[in-house]
Image 1 (cartoon, rainbow, N blue to C red):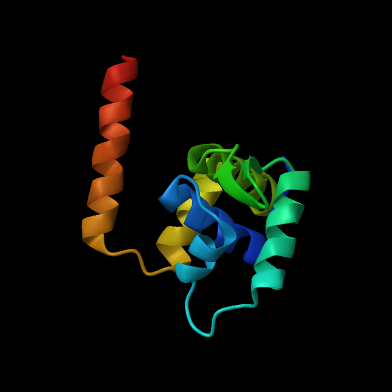
Image 2: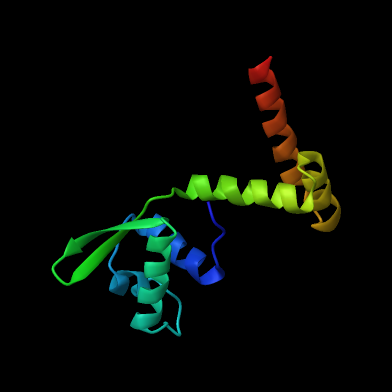
Length: 123
């Protein structure tokens, strides 16, 4: 799987939310100022080439839909982050967020609870 640019990711986020859509529907979901139709259409064609989205043809227009789920891409990006910045160490990643991101105690408690649930299920 390839990494997405910010513009490609924005379009994918919209398609994941919509499930499927025409270029005009994608543009309608974007913040103002809205990009030109041709700009979005070009990015969509790039996503088709990268095999992130597929399409159905209706006359002269195309309806696009995701081929890659949001969960699949989230997993890819998380692994890329872990490998690229934290030497594949979840401990280093969590430590970074605890130290640098001023983790709230409520959030830390939720993380501990989640880890304890996972640990008890594996036991």
